[in-house]
Image (tube, rainbow, N blue to C red; front, side, top):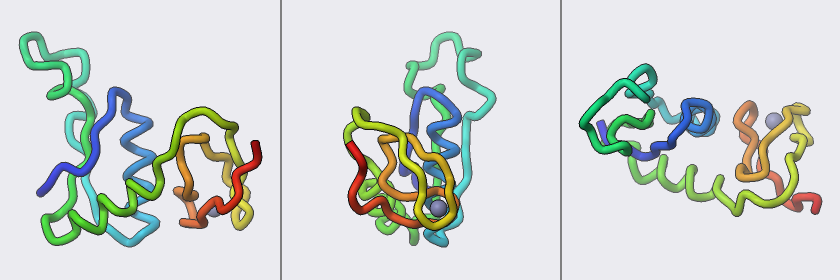
Amino acid sequence: MKRVYRAATLPDVAHARNLLTAAGIPSEIRNQFLAGAAGDLPMFETWPQLLVDEIDEARALGVLRRAQRPVEGEAWTCRRCGERLEPQFTACWRCGMEADAPAR
Ligand SMILES: [Zn+2]
């Protein structure tokens, strides 16, 4: 397994996982219950993280990279399925639809 994403909070990691799932890439969350319970470990090591099979690593990183943009902006609503999405994501986690022209 290869780590492709990690974040301080589980919802961020869960969202990233949903993006991969929408793209057809199986993934697995680690550390989801460890955060805050890990004494001497470096903080990053206790963060929830997302892992994929080695063969899917490049594609997963591509999906996540395309989904990232500056956090400023407004939440948007998917045109296809109506899901409400945070501004840092450019693709809908539910159906994979990309936000082409985000409203500002
Ligand atoms: Zn959608």
